[in-house]
Length: 367
Length: 254
Ligand SMILES: Nc1ncnc2c1ncn2[C@@H]1O[C@H](COP(=O)(O)OP(=O)(O)OP(=O)(O)O)[C@@H](O)[C@H]1O
Ligand SMILES: [Mg+2]
Image (cartoon, rainbow over all chains, first blue to last red; front, top):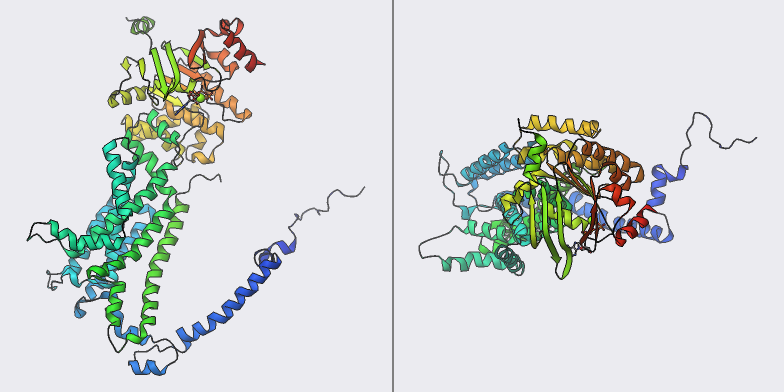
């Protein structure tokens, strides 16, 4: 009798060679059909066309060393000499030149605190203490006025530290407000519901620029004369109020994705509204909307550059300051590439972190 | 010495529904419900789909509000006072068709949450009690898994254990086995039978008539928002009084 199976004892059957490994990958991903093959070849063509000249411009023909603008004019490639000349202005804005170690240190402290907060094992009450300390230290370093540091008014703050502090406060400040608004919008109490809806719709209906503008120029009109609210603080509050409206809708989406049974079983165990909300509903709802939350935060990070209209010089604003120098203004592309890379670095980090967090909080899978 | 049975009799029924009516908009979903459940009594509720069974038992722990009539549970009348409602809910456990475990917490955390936050039980004590209940429903080895990693039958047993951790006086079951595959139904029913034999006051919406015969003290048949018939199981199955009951029984008993 012929053997039923061709499997030889001791060797398990293997998938066909062209469905696995590099070959299999090439075949299934790039050349699985005629159309797919054409697209693959077109893309390769496009890359060949774009990448080499880009490398020439950015790297091979570029002026890398510190050099006067005349050297750049003679060169074919990018003028990175601009950064030797202007990097500190771009990064720290109008902050007094000799004191710029202070924003550098302040920023480092902030980044360390952010890095700590990224680790889920550190989500403990003491982290709030770390943040309080961080922000105090940040303020101390930036303002100075004590310990032999000269006082620097916050209208002189600028560049990356300003962008970062506006963003960090923007996120930290808008988040609880957004949660409150989202819960308020679902509330059965008519006044709370109406206030939340009204707020969200009103703020979403106007551009951030006009919120900033109103905070800066109209708000003081309502204050009694002599009372002055800090320019930076006003911009910060405007950013928080604006972001919260968007974030609230994102969070509401998350709340709506939680089945009613969760709420019911929590209630039937005797948990009250706040216990049910904070321990059962919110943790699940927020986890479900991590991607759009991070999306909103990435927008916020980039939107901070709109504070330029109320004469604060964030990263993008201080780049414009740098490019105002007639000697260097021709090299604006290099400047924007530099700033774009910084923005990209932060946004890419946020995006990756959100993916990591999502996978960390994943509990539904069977092993 | 006070006789326990006497004291129970003296305190009257633990659940008392008198002239309870409820509407969803114009739709009259509960029509003049009168039901009394004694301490230790096991009531099985059955009836066609849409007859108001879920709505009725959900009124008992006020997941639904009734609009007319009185519901008194363990001496507390269910009225709009939130404190009273929380007090009543603490004494009533509820098991749902779709388990409703908290998916972001481990099984053990599911079990200890309410005792710790509602009863202020210290963590260690709550965890010991939770493990004891997991033993009782025969899945102590699953304590540190997440609900999503368990089978339906295991999840439902966790849900029962979770309710028991609050040491309720009354347990409500709303079709606890109807979302389960046939081979898992028995493991859940076994747990419920054991619970019934331990003397728990139970109201159970189910179409598992074998279970009803084994444990029920009384059968309640609902149709069109009314309680059509209430009788001990022997009588209920042998000679039901109402035509509607007969029809229903003939359909589900084949
Ligand atoms: N939130 C609601 N709004 C309007 N009508 C509802 C609502 N909930 C239930 N109903 C209606 O009330 C009636 C009774 O519902 P209920 O869930 O109590 O029935 P049931 O006896 O439990 O049925 P089943 O066996 O299918 O679970 C049904 O006709 C249903 O459509
Ligand atoms: Mg039902």
